[in-house]
Length: 342
Image (tube, rainbow, N blue to C red; front, side, top):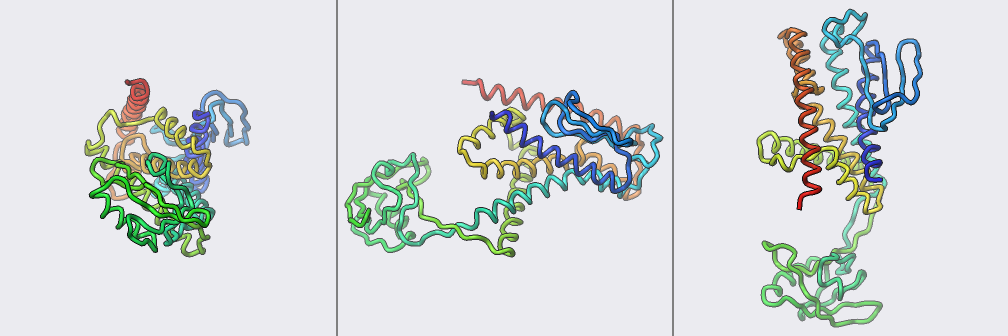
């Protein structure tokens, strides 16, 4: 099931990417010989007289064959016969659609879930499962006193625990539960070696719907945050801060999808769809041969008056494709090694 979900997520992302190229090519009247949904052998196809629309057996992504991308091509209105700006738009359109997909998903989640507002009263919303206090405290308990210190709002809980935990790892806590006051001995938990002990409780939250302006602002802020984090990850990869053994590929994505699907929440899978779509968009923008970014780089050179021999460009992209396949094989092998290592 995890493999199927991962294929569907990647399939949607790649299909949207290729749809961007297709629509942009149509906009500039470039001939498109085939637009395929999925990969591998054909299951069904329909020919309109100028474009073959096909559904293929592997439900993962798709591809677009834009005529005239070959060096020797004589196709009328083909890709290479168009002005540099038109080619730039067609190449960038796939990445643009990935970003639009992610933004639409984030907008949907933001407006559907609303904004979380913390209850400032000392009411326990939840308790971390790993915390020892989970055996003593319950959700909806109202904390009234900790080691003799009166508690009137949530912020006072952390301050009191930080002060008292220096001397003790079990605190006397008075809580109101079902209308009755109870005095409990609550153990603290050391979650990390470099952090002080904690009770492991989470405040109560309520959710309110966003207004149009606030929801749009929050969605763009979230999109920008994911975008910046992804760029930081790419920078770490390029500068060598990410070790080779940490590079992940398709198998790693299946593992991540499996972890996300354990929650049983479609919302988490939608977040993953948005994050992966941004990752795919940024990856394709890298100025690496064979990727959209690599092709865009040659078009930009042409726009500023630097012409590169088309045969040389084609050889560069062919070499880049070989390197990309090698990277995919390496990442997949790395994923398998990480799964089976002891």
